[in-house]
Length: 133
Image (tube, rainbow, N blue to C red; front, side, top):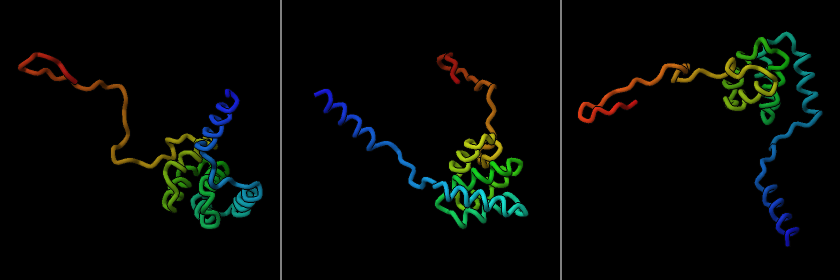
């Protein structure tokens, strides 16, 4: 009985595990790496745009490979990738995967930058005398 329950539990767990939909093959990675080397005259932004047009299904791998090859241009690579339709989450994940500070490639938000440290102001209810933040 325990064996059946264990097998059923494992089968259920495996059925909900995420599986990479677009796992890159070694040949595809080699093609991307070769293209990066061959197109050394292009900027990082131009390079990522070119490779994304060739390998749109491998966006995360393309962005990560270009950032790894051109870390000084990571911000412009990220901007070009997002303009080409790659999600900000994918770009950030790609940056992290090649040890690029994600803050350096994150798009600006309408909220601006958040600072931590100043406490929220408190007010006192005149009727009850209770302070709240």
